Amino acid sequence: MLHERGIGARVYEAAPEIKPIGVGISLLPHASKELGLLGLTDALSDVAVTTRESCFFNRFGQFVYSEPVGRHAAGAPVAYLDRVADGAGRVLPGHRCTGVDSDARGAVAHFVDSSTGRALPPARGAAVIGCDGIHSVVRQQFFPDEGPPVYSGVNMWRGTTVWEPFLSGSTYLRAGWLTVGKMVIYPIRHNVDGQGRQLVNWVAEVQTDSYSEQDWNRTGRLEDFYGIFAAWTFDWLDVAGLIRGAEQILEYPMVDRDPLPRWTHGRVTLLGDAAHPMYPRGSNGAGQAILDARALADCLQSMESFPAALQAYESQRLAATAAVVHASRSAPPDVILKAVHERTGDRPFEQITDVITPPRWPSCPTATSASPDMTASRWPAVGISSVGRGVVG
Ligand SMILES: Cc1cc2nc3c(=O)[nH]c(=O)nc-3n(C[C@H](O)[C@H](O)[C@H](O)COP(=O)(O)OP(=O)(O)OC[C@H]3O[C@@H](n4cnc5c(N)ncnc54)[C@H](O)[C@@H]3O)c2cc1C
Image (cartoon, rainbow, N blue to C red; front, side, top):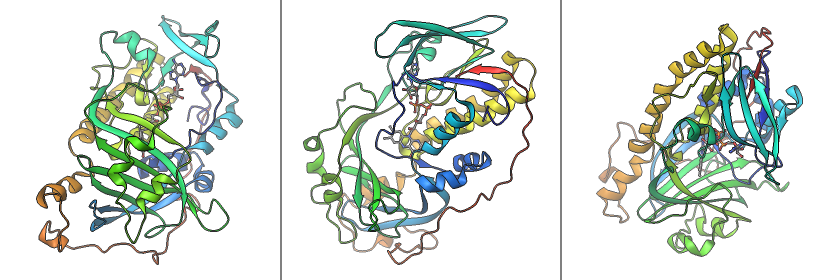
């Protein structure tokens, strides 16, 4: 977004190499729209599946509820990174940020080499954006007493499996409930084997008392959670087989942090999970990071003073994202599964209308439903003017 507005930026990344971690995410329409505005719709459609509906089942495979969703795109935003790398040539891996300084004329980020720990030359720019994730060192510098992320009581295991299309072939599926085992399952790539099978992303969520503080890349063990889902062999999807078929499993505790009172300190601010990590139950963390980027780029483009632009960005986004953090804790979309779990006493039901009664009952999607593809952008192009100022992210 900075590049499109002619604002020079460099991205310093701790990972020594940029590569997929092997799982996917769902981008809600407010986020995929922003990528569309950057002209990335076609590139995104090459690496994503457009979700057709969001579907809920109990842990016995009984259909609870379904609703159509917008032109959701599920998949890792690899195309976005390629575009940044091509367009700006400014992604520098192997740089672990250790701290930042800010003065009246600019801001400085300090780095060590991620592999050797040796000090690297600092980078100076008009501003530094701390977008270094949930364990942000930039956030920690400004809030040293904050402590570790807050554990939700739910542990997650995630993976991807090459599998036959299920339901409509573009269904975002949630099933079960956290206390007895919940699954989130959705395809992230069509026809990965030339025979029509998809790459299917899944997350097992289980209420667990203890957890280990870890990063994304901790390898999970099948035996730690598989027993909970071993009987999930429904005629419309063999969930147990799907789990067993994963090449790799990652384990991660569901954590977030309380919203901060401020993000901006002089010419330094926070963005994405560094600013507002949230539970992934609403599929919104990366989407909110994308909205942050849009707001920040707009403020930097329209305002002369960098500190004022960073303050304006914070004013636009801090309260809005705090509301999403709270909503992800208290009222995420899966509350319908909690209601069904509690009202049935965790037993199969005769008819869902005995349990909950919406005004008009939707039908269960089937494999015969057509799945739309993401085609050309439906969003207008934006005019870009060059202001030529530098930002370090
Ligand atoms: C199981 C799970 C499922 C999720 N599903 C969804 C979903 O469906 N939809 C959605 O929108 N969101 C989802 N999320 C949330 C989403 O992944 C995050 O909100 C998003 O990745 C945040 O992006 P970010 O760039 O702010 O942080 P990150 O993705 O964490 O990126 C931070 C980057 O900073 C680098 N870094 C860290 N420290 C340093 C340092 N000191 N110096 C330099 N670089 C550093 C890291 O290597 C990393 O590349 C999910 C999260 C989880 C755990």
